[in-house]
Length: 246
Ligand SMILES: Cc1cc2nc3c(=O)[nH]c(=O)nc-3n(C[C@H](O)[C@H](O)[C@H](O)COP(=O)(O)O)c2cc1C
Image (cartoon, rainbow, N blue to C red; front, top):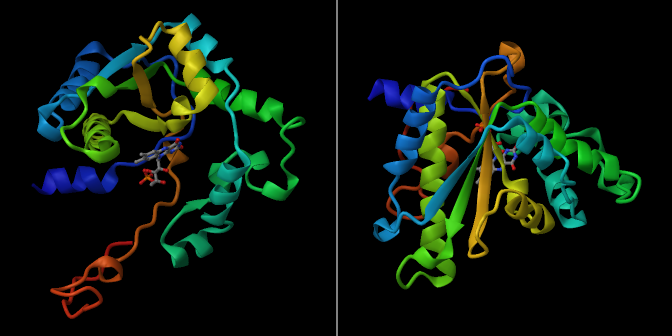
């Protein structure tokens, strides 16, 4: 139990480069995929397929697809950024601006034409620095029964994601979720390149590898239990907890 809780606590996003000279062994990949296989899904629909991409030429081709950035994304992203570690430690929510490419953190300065190169370099950097991509495909034909908008099907995909992430963490393998793969034209181009059938949608992709720089870990924050736990009625916070670990 302690071990599971420790792995949950240690699981983190690895956004730095991966060591390309150190591929993921097949036995370890197998364990990560087994974790996906045993993920809970609504009605046991198993509404996913997983596409492994480790061919260098394919990874390069994926990296050449320009990532779209919408103004909405930039503005909403900006709203949850902290510009110093101190600010993030107080807010306990959101992310450090330094985790993002400089062109993304100032919506006023954003120019879709001149910043086209930063859109290009975003996928190239994320994909060019990983030995392996797992693309999780959502199969809408395996819809969760009576689930409006297939919300339960989408929650199930989150369970697949978390299982693979925890398995990777337990194996010391870095993991970076890339939701950009599910965006409009990026999704279309990736699907065409990798021969994904039309009825499948890309839910998300994950880049996996051994971190090139072990000191790359960024500051991670969470709210304390007393900030979101309610007792018997919403707003009642009469339970006392051990102080949360920072
Ligand atoms: C559904 C989902 C989508 C995410 N999409 C991205 C993404 O596109 N790019 C990225 O760098 N991180 C992505 N993340 C990672 C979160 O930003 C990260 O989990 C969060 O900031 C907490 O940091 P931690 O994972 O290091 O604890 C995603 C996480 C989840 C659960």
